Length: 130
Image 1 (cartoon, rainbow, N blue to C red):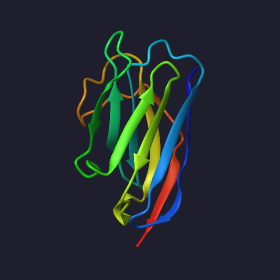
Image 2: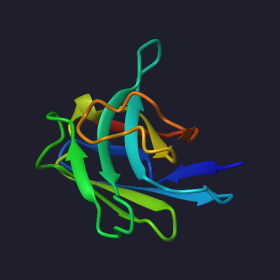
Image 3: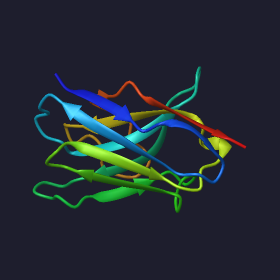
Image 4: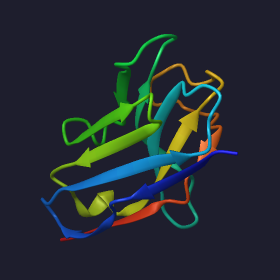
């Protein structure tokens, strides 16, 4: 069993920064990608960012939703099964519950179209006031 635990959310003002962290308990068979989605009540989860590793790769390729490009930066440590999201120049529209995601089967091939997620975290709330 794998558990993803997010932290780092909070209440900030527009223009501020936050850094989200996601750590993993348990031992995933193979960490192929990790990333972040966000979800508002009653709505579907939206892709935010991801880092994907190829076989034997430790650096990873990164992908972002258009709405966060240039403001958010994802980074991760494949060996430690951790991922981070540095969020700068936050806007009220970034307010949401942010969930960590992990792909252990290789179903995710990159881009913003990540349809199959093997493991989800419970989320951390980010609220940006104007």
